Each structure stands twice: as C-alpha cells, then as structure tokens.
Image 1 (cartoon, rainbow, N blue to C red):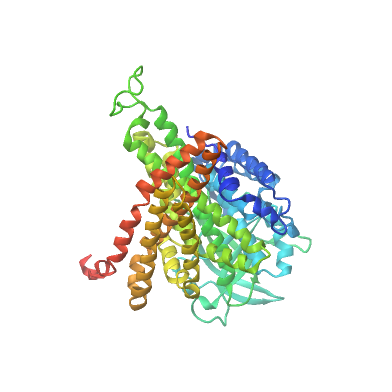
Image 2: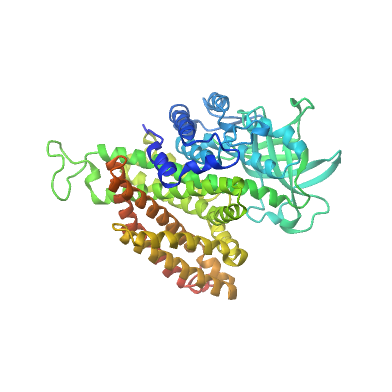
Length: 596
C-alpha cells in the first residue's frame, strides 16, 4: 500500500531560509501572516492531506464517479471529506476577507495546493476550480455579482467551473458557437454545449457556478468576440438561497485514463440564465485570470504527483532485496542487497529528488511574486513581480508537468513489475500525471505562448530581467569558495539560453515555423536554467549554514550533494536542447504530407 508524508522539512527550509517568507508579513493586509503562523497553517494542511484525503485516493480511483439521471455521484468518502475541508476553512484560505475569506498570502495556498495534489489529485480538482472561479469574479465581476456569489464560493457551499472547450473548438476558442441572447433586466440566455468541464457536475456542493465563454449577437469574429457569463446550476433567490433549476444539465461524464474521481463533464446549456462578467466581447481578458491561475495550479499537480511517487519508490528501493552491489555485498547477512545500492536505481531516484526540490523552490518563488505583485506598495516592485509571474507561468505549467510525468514513470520503473500492479499505487500516479501535460493549454501551447508572446513582450523586457537576476546570482556565487563549479555550470547554461533567445528572435521574425519548431526545446532550456538557478540559491544557503554550524548537518549536506548531482548530471541537458534549437525548422518541415 502506498504512503504519503508532506515534505514539511523541505517546505520550511525553502520558505524560511531560501525565500524569506517573513517578507510577506510586511505587505499591507498580511500583517498577521508571520512565519510562525504560516508554519502552523501548513502543518494543519499536511495533517488533513495525510489523514483524510490520501486514504481516499486509491479507493476513489477504483470507484470513480457515476452519472445517475443527470446527477453525478462522487466516490465514497469524498462528500464527508469535502464537508470537513470547508468546515476547516481551507476553501477560504487566500480569499479576500471582505467576502468571507481568511486573507492569507497566495503563497500559503500554493503550498497547500501541492500537498493536496500529492494526497488526492482528483479531490483537489473540485475546490481548485472553485478558487479559479473566485479569482475571475474577484478581478472582473460587478459588485452585485461579487456580493451574490463570492461568499458562498469562498466558504465552499457553492462550487465553480470554467467552461471553455467545445467539441469542435479546443485551443482555437475563436470558433466557439455557444451563444448568449439578451433576456432583459441585465440577464442573458446561454445556449450551447461545452465538453471536458472539470467538476462540471457533482454532489459535493449545493450549487455550482459556471463561468461560460459565449458570443453575443453582435460579436465580432474570433476571440475578440468572446464574452464571459456567470451561469449557476440553481438560480439564487433574493435572500441568497437556492431557487429554480437553471437550464444547464450534465449530458455525460468522460471515462478517462486517470483522475477518475474527478467528474469531467459534457454540459448542455439550453436557454440558461446567466449574467455578464466584465465587458461585452472582453471575455478572454476575464477568463485569462482563471486560466493563468489554473496553469500554475496544474504545474503544482506535476510536482505533487512526482513527490508522492518519489516517496513510494524510495521506500521500495530501501526494502526490496535484489542482487548484490557491484562493489561487493552491502547486506552480507541477508540473501541480497537492497536495490538502492545499484547505480541505475540511485540515478533515477536522484533525478526525481533533484528535480522535485528544484521545481518546488521555483514554484514557491513564483508564488511569492504573486503576493508581491498584488500587495507591495512600490509600483516598480509590483511590475517586476508581475513580469516574472507572466514569464514563468508557461514554464511552470509545462516544465513541471513534463518532468512530473517522466518522474512518475521513473518511480514506476524502480518498482519493476510491482510498479505495474495497482495495489502499490504508482501506476495511478502515472495515469493521473498524464493529463497535466494536456489540459489548461497543452504544453506545446505553453511553449508557443512563451516564445510567441512572453519573449517579445515590451521589447523583451521580461526575459532580459530574468537574465539579469540569474546572472547576478551566478556572479556572486562564482566568488564563493565551494560554489564555483555550480556557478560555472549555471553560467554556461544561461549563456546557452541567451544564445537560443537571440537565435529565435532572428529566425522567428523571418520564418514563424522556426519559432514553432524550437518552442518546446526552448521552454525546457529555460526550465532547466530556472531550476538550476534555484539550486544555486539553495546550495548557497546550505553551504552558509554548514560553515556556521547552523541547522541539521545531514540535511544541508544532502542539499549540497543533490545540487552537485543536478549540476553534473541534469543541467548538461541544456546543450542538447540548444543543439536541437540550432538545427532549425528544416528537418521538421521537409517531408511532404504524403511522405509521413
């Protein structure tokens, strides 16, 4: 049977020693969010994930969801867990106090999100979608809509969804056909069908608030003609209770490869009453608030699954006796040595460990930037933080989920045949991790967003700023004894990333296929540099602690050893990525269609 323990030691190390979580308490509105208070909240979240959600993960996967006359039933135990989840206030953790939220930093929710994804990804989808709906309404909803819907979204009484995709319109939202007709008194009638709607129908909440993309009768073509509408499952009464059933029904649920306890629905809208969110024809602007938040959350899904897969693969490798170490028996009194003695097993586990810890650090750094973007009194600091969040959103989404899927596969391989058996749990993590590379914009789309939108934004301001930050830390570390090799390695990979950036700027302007052909490799190149930068920061901190005799020596020594593995065995992959980028589009575009 699989197990899960929230990695609180590593989380606290990152928050307190690497990222200075104490800076958040200095932001307006976060005065009570002291490091001690945040530690207490995260410890409570860890307990909930370990004791309540994780025990439901395998059973939820086996049972799945069931559609019964238009109503979806979640697996046994989910409703009770959700009731406790809302009673404990987890749905309100980072929401605005004005509407009933706790008002903690977004960074805190980031950490909780990672633990939720490790413990029970399917369960995490339901409150995760609700938080996304909250964010979109908070940013673009009228005050009337906020007053009517936010309090119950925040306390978890009502759930939320995002309804974008149609059967003929996936990524290309400009060709969607769902329509909205004015119905008087500021309301609209929404008609159309949406597919792949996560948490579109379920029995965890008494109402579900759908945010639906649709087109008004006078809408211009393409994405410029899309508006966003709030369409509840039940129309609320003037007193805030449940009124009549609205014209939205669940036509079917998808039978999926993974996240089987998460209801993925086809929703039919038949003259459903809805209200405009934001301005007419500006729906994509409002929806992007929800989509960008969801992309960051999906990145955390890749990290969360990679963490729990690593924990179980490591436990197995320590216990499974198979063969003898190449350098002689390490367990001479037993029939064989534990497989952790074998270099290939160690290499796979170290790869997961190094990526997990580096990706976690990068994710938390971005989480803190979100709080700085929204709360810091200095406009220049807010802009700098917003730039880094924008640049890193596609990187976090795609790099963390690509590596998350690779890592769950490595974990499965560590268990050999047992990894392929359901009772050990790893095969579920592989299945669950695969969707994260697809939804909320496929990873190829994230790469195109990075190369096509984020790199040229404001004349390249965002990427130049990122280069400046990394180069500054490289130069500082290069002058510190014991860090020179790390700084040299990262400096070399940063140069490769800068070279690839200039190459794309030159080639992509002349031939867009050049940018498209290189986009995925470029995103991974940036991902490795960003994670390597985080490892340089961690190595700097741990070396300082060891030199000063502070902290647990074994913990910091392991950090430095893992950093050395990352820089020696993983970061060199940037050279291969640069070579692929330099090869250009020609080898990809050369074949005629009938030659495939």
